[in-house]
Length: 349
Ligand code: NAD
Ligand code: IPM
Ligand code: MN
Image (tube, rainbow, N blue to C red; front, top):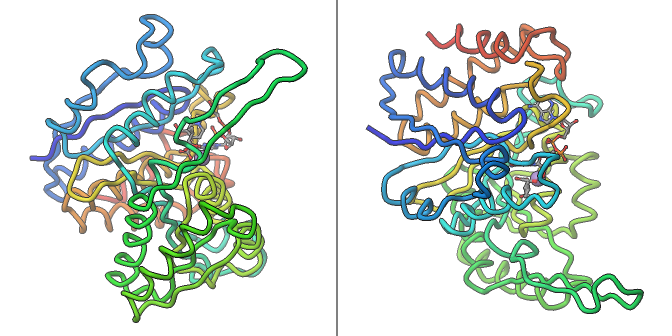
């Protein structure tokens, strides 16, 4: 029995997580997936009522009592500071040391990509985003705040350990999955210090994996090539901020944010699975959000928990529903969130 903490969060989070949870419940009987799901109400509502984002002791509880976390999204227009989202989401990524943000970019059906003349084999790669440091370290400050002379600093932190472990993870994955190339994106032509460290570590790690081709691109060029020639990518590795930006672009070329899945992983430890998209406040409560990102996220989670057949079954069911146009409006269908969930679940049994 594996224990999963479910944190639906804000906006469309609860709507899409409900469909992922229904999917997981069906897998109990169809694929003998034994999960105990425990729900937590962390999010904007709780923060506004009680002033609590991530409750005290939450990280210890998650790491001691759970194998995985399934989250929706965090972000609410009523919390302008975004403090609760930072505490909960970045709090878990950093506090549980979930250093790998694994974000697959895979075209499920040629119809879905906005790129011309691309087939499913042209868009099939995985992004390894560093997930605990870089521009997300929270270091910086103000001088003379609110005056005409104001200065704001925003630091980016790159540790040898942090850079090495994400690059190693990318090469290990490429080797294990038979992917031929790892491409690192950075801005080392401008960011002379952090970029230099990434360059040196990349070359050093690459030398340990002679069977995998090591490739480098500046991140601006990569943004262009992801649109013009996505077929060249197998595995991409980058820092926290560039990885964030590149994976929204990756989501777009696979059909939109509503489809994109992700895992925040520390191998062997409790890990967090969440769709790439946010809380989409304009869609919240309308029953129109696409649940596929959350459902494919649950597929990544069950694979992590040791149920690869169940994971493949979810993916096949999603492909089936998409190929028959049984989808929400963002993919050109007419279904509600729940109906789109049903279209997938009915293909699982
Ligand atoms: P967003 O991902 O919420 O929305 C961006 C666009 O994608 C919108 O047009 C939205 O309608 C569409 N979209 C997103 N998910 C969709 C789905 N499942 N189905 C159909 N369409 C979908 O990003 P945003 O608007 O920049 O941010 C909104 C809030 O979410 C902010 O508070 C932001 O900080 C937060 N956010 C949270 C996470 C997270 O919790 N992991 C990720 C990104 C943004
Ligand atoms: C993501 C989101 C988060 C990030 C935000 C909500 C803090 O954009 O998961 O991609 O920047 O990592
Ligand atoms: Mn993002």
